[in-house]
Image (cartoon, rainbow, N blue to C red; front, side, top):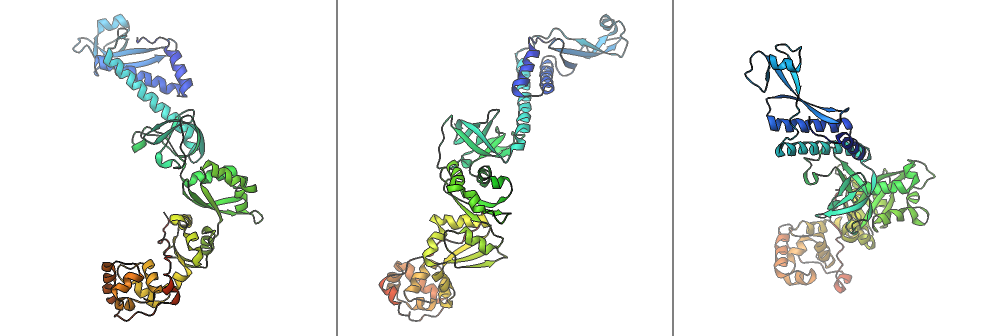
Length: 447
């Protein structure tokens, strides 16, 4: 018999506190004792371990075969000895004998039993947590900041801890231990042993994913929760700016107005949760041209040219709207591209007009030429590759703000595109002031 004082009470308390199935815990204890007994007596003995509910203790039985002459005491017992235990014992019977002399299993065996119990309890607790949270994947949870580990945030959700990785944190906001926080449940794992960086975490949270933004609007806007207004897409640069596209299934419900709320109350609640992240709410449209027109607001759009096969579009805007359409460091057009899932190239009206000119396009064919430099040359009267090849190096250095090496190389490359010819006289405006570079942002592809 294994000494197990108050074992039944301990089992009941663990099951109650941890929510672990009682049968699983008892099975873990039996396996631990079985492992410890084998550590002490070896693996050749046939051992059976049972937890007695009546006695509240673990009982260990050894089974041996009844034989006339014993050759192996670990697996065999003589008929004479067997009948002292059971008067009805016969040859070839398997006789079970309760072991009462194993209370002290030794330090190594006891440590082994402890490890088995800990391991099985952890597995059982993981199963409990998984079953509890698997239906909450894709929802928002509330927690308390517990601690920080190498930039990752450990969040106490009450029953268990979750990890908010560094990349899932909004960069503009810092939290301290004890702060309350809301986050999106990105992943709920059953087995965490082979899960890479977060191998000890079952719940992975995020505050930077698009889904967090969408769920916040679902919580703030009743029309979204009821299905009247739908969020058709979202794109974010967390902590800075975001765009969401909305539509309504009822003609008398304004989807943008529903999301904004009275005096902006609804959207402001979301903005506050996201630490001041600017949110553009745009009407969704099945027409890509209309959709991009809405997505680039507040910039005005003059023309949209669509290439369906490449899922790309050229958007032309007035010259004074170019910087607004592109946004700071290309942010506005980049978010619009992700929102639509299309590659977007934004150009000013003057740039587009230049691109329609075959001479201007010949400038772009020159190796080492970019649109900004081509614009400066074109405005200064160097309107083709031939004019560039025929220009003087000093003139190019002055007009295009180039060093001598760059100017000479461009002239040589231009001669390979068109024969040299004298450049045209620069327009009057260009003679007084060089045209500004409105090259804007490069083509933006959705990511």
